[in-house]
Image (cartoon, rainbow, N blue to C red; front, side, top):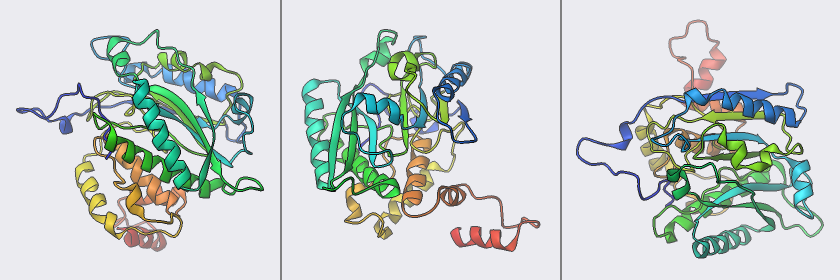
Length: 347
């Protein structure tokens, strides 16, 4: 079972319990309303991120941040210049794997990933070494620095990619959940492999960084060919969990500022309901992707995982969001009967 932690973090002891940490972060969203991808949107997102530095935090080292990140559309033009024989846009899924720093452990993790991809009737198009510059990192962030490889997967159709769009998104979701679970089962510290994203639509760069460090650490972000019509950025003030590379935001669907004070109850209910889950859209034994909510994740990580399941299970993203964050509908006198019925059905 994957748990997003590193071994130096304190455990519950005496009157201290990490579940009761609280505070806030900073988020920003930049979008071209006409859907035009450009590097300018990426630059504006990074500028907004740097302007949120005061909403993030660092520890005793000013160059070890609680976390910073950016979610953009897959930079297809950039990747076509990096990777040979890339399938058409929307017909491949890609993301960065946070691997163990130890080369032997990383190679073992890569072998597990490759087996899982084959098990799920997909093929590996390419592995790409992700350029990074760790020269500005503080000692704490550097000590727990993963290694980074970008995975590209696609369908196995002989006459061309057999999967695209949401069908491929669901297949990539299963691969990611299996990788996180199965690599953690064999990792000495239980941490396993983590993918900030593995998608045919979006791509996440993030880490245990300060806001100005993000584009320095990932030189890809400085390349004019990295284009997107949107940029979601987050500057983290680590609250209910300690800083780590996986727990930086954004996640696969959201970034969050604040606390979810019902998180423990919701996690327990999600775990209890796993035995009832079934989907024609995600075939096979769903046990292979359990637990849905990763132990050791933050409240936002848990929310993101539940939202992802509802969306990939067949609901539109707005539908899934309204299920996750319902209005106070029951005594709302001006709300339409149809809308109340929607919330009542999902209550």
